[in-house]
Length: 190
Image (cartoon, rainbow, N blue to C red; front, side):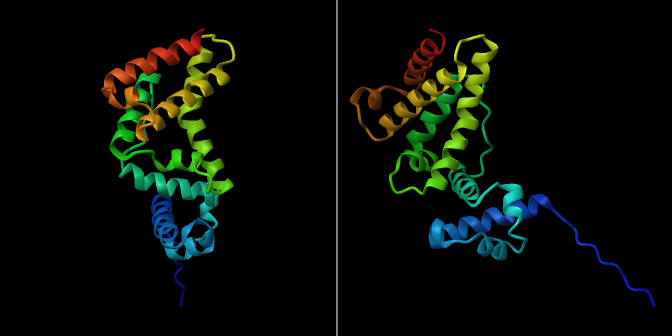
């Protein structure tokens, strides 16, 4: 009699999705600190070590979970220029207010791990594309200029969301995006 060999089919996308869904549920129920990676792995029905492979860390998984919830399944945007970036960020903030990434960066009660993960996401999605564009244009100190531009953009977005200034809150989005692009463009190249 021959023993039949069983092979386990591995589906990386399904495992990643299961971890993300389990994280959303558990972080929502228990919060970040009270949820362990073991709990997430058990809920997902996969090895908790896959969190490191697919997300990096518990904090990175937390950011992925809140962003996935915030993005409503929308694909991650690839920004071609500051104007496009400003348009998407201002429109999103107009619809929902400051998102989870911005909140994680500015709230005093955010854990250090989550703040670092949020910072890394902003650096990767916003700062690095602008810096790369400035490098290609031969602009001096491209990383610093990109950080200044993103800081200005996030500040305007937050000011508009929280109604800090009357004019920023009243101006139509398209006009604001044009002014932001002009201002940041001047900051980036002068």
